[in-house]
Image 1: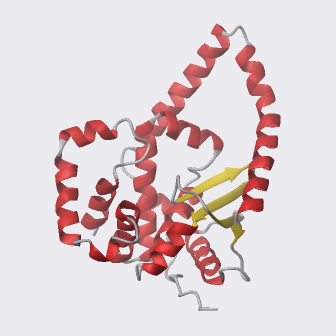
Image 2: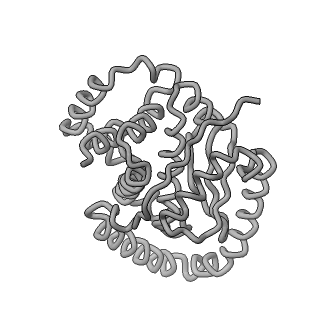
Length: 256
């Protein structure tokens, strides 16, 4: 059995709140205001039926969370000190550096619809990594790209982005969702402390691991600058909960 390469990155403690992007507070305020106003209006219009739904929702959510957690536990590989210990060590080091005391479980799953995610089932925080992401990082010669992805997902947990209400607001107020992604990228860049690692981590999500060794980074940076300056790209992005990947690459490339 070949040893898994080291991906953990030690360093100083990082305050994730210092990486929160400007405008997040205002976006969160308006998202909260719209959510409360919409809920009150819905209760009035539905003659109180919506209020009953909110009262009984915790019971339904408890059942759904237990079912979802069991599905992941039954179909993925749980990372631990005995299973993919280098990934487990990276999670523990980043948790300590971020001051995260919450329990975080990491699973490697087979999925073609996402690369990684931080989800919350009740009080349980779970990071999902796909087998393609792990394989791609190793096969492309960029194993520490996994560290950047883990740092990004742990940043969501540290900043409470994956809580039920916050994630709901981010899905419906897309600007808040995009700002949260930029904040998580900023935290992840600070944790890995290396723009090349961060850039390759995002670039692999853009082109895939097979093409990563053949990509011209300078050309990608130039294209990212064009995207950042294109008004139609900005308009297209307004319908998305995540920023365009080249906009995220542009932020990493410009970071101090």
